[in-house]
Image (cartoon, rainbow, N blue to C red):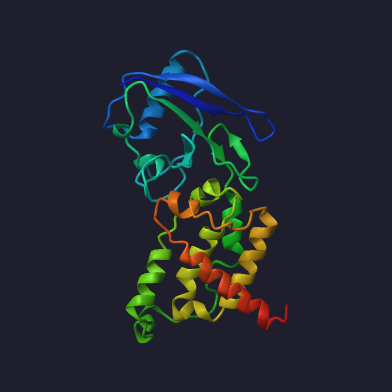
Length: 249
């Protein structure tokens, strides 16, 4: 198939940037979206043009670095799918495809389709961990955990921190990301010791990084490649309000 691409090109965060048109020729249905971009870049290199810069790593849908907005949807049209796992069979010969980077004040553009998602790392550094001693590996088996809580925690732990929720949210909120990290720790006994401090520190970190607030659009859940549920946001809000009440705020 032959496709027309409109790709966002931007030299750095200070550059204005613009959409540029490219032709993707002889693309097969079995190619992934990133493989299609590889073909386009090979053609650009042959013509002496600068290849399109885009981020990727695993190409197996588990790292989340392939962050792109395709035709206005974070990670493209397929649900619970990252860009690297999106195949060209979902497009039609002659299609026009628009490819852009994540759009968020907290994610400055590094180059073309690559953005700096370090803000998510700093939110985790603020409290997304367990520092209290929980014993050795065998000790975990001595702490009873219900299957319901275990399943909830593992579902939340599927979050790969790609930032699609931020890109999809009209407010640029990272609450689905943060709430997933909070849930997968707070649902287990080992993480409950520091839960009050954790939720307070991570919410404050989100505010510092410039993320917006949740507006209940649910677009974050719709574009999440791992299907993280918005009920985690409700859980985080309850935990945060309890913390404020205990602190007398």
